[in-house]
Length: 440
Image (cartoon, rainbow, N blue to C red; front, side, top):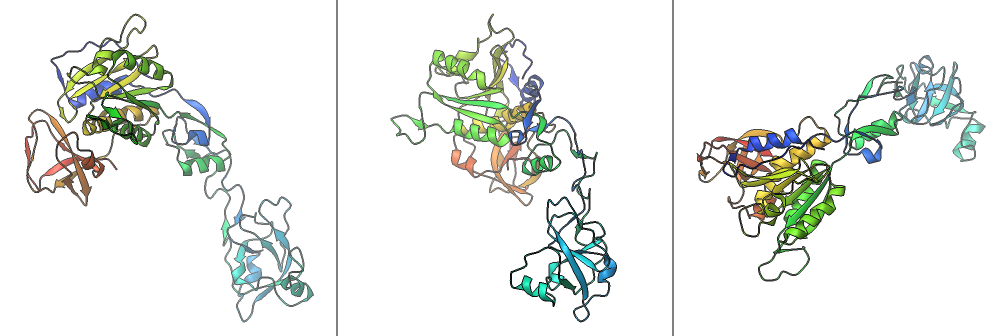
């Protein structure tokens, strides 16, 4: 959700990257929490601490297939002088009625089965003759005619310390302890823990629904034949994938032609399933920049407080940007430039933090580090603009990938970092330490 205020564009103002981002994060608010079934909550963020109602494991149990015995009965056991014990029966996982192990006795026990009363330790079956000692019952069992139960003997060839091969009650989580803290993103292992402590539902902030839309009459769906002057639509696929990678449920809308009425209608149709809308293309100053034309005057009496402001940012690539809210519910909308690299860099800097904010995460930014520039020549950057160059980062160094053109999709595909050149720097020599945004 967002808190919207009327926006009035200052056409001459140049916004910094930080100012634009701060405006976005001051507007976007985390989604309201809901209660979800465990599997539906995957990828969501907990909004409250989860306390364990009971211990995990809930009882002492065996970590091996073997025999539950008393320590004193196997003390000094060896291959030459094994401890010979009476087998009084079996203890299986899930068994409710437990045997009592007394002096000179052993109970066959399976992995995960509760440690029976009287037993103090478990000897693995590999330390024994497997209950195939002398006697008629043992011979029947060896022949497969006596599958289990009481009767017979087992020879134990090694001593065992107290509590050996026993998983103690509460050794994983004690009753009343905090199993998961608020702010945790629920992945497979966290969902496993919730299930193990008996939670069927959990209170989370839902994954935000992000609608991604490309604009441009020149765009053709991948898999279709290109006509004269046409290109395949890559932006909507890249940004939809990026939104999913950020944690959102993302919907891709097929490319919209350069028609103001069609664009407005398409956006209105998509609002019903959007917590955030992202458009790409049509935000510059060209004659066919329909996003700017369609959304510049979107605020009216039916949508008080809504509005999209189009700005110039002191950055390269990605100078033209748009941001605001649309519709009666004030759905945040970020309008990104259409060049592939400009669009992707803009997503990383502005859309991804907005998605993470909607999720309710404390840290919404990509990690950054410092690295030594490994390049064949100095990097140049326009004065007054913060430049973001694609790079490959490894072992404390970063190497530029491709040129500075905002159309170089192949270079983007081989980059795992962005090299940041500050606004007041126009040249960076090889060997200089630079700031790096890690994308992987």
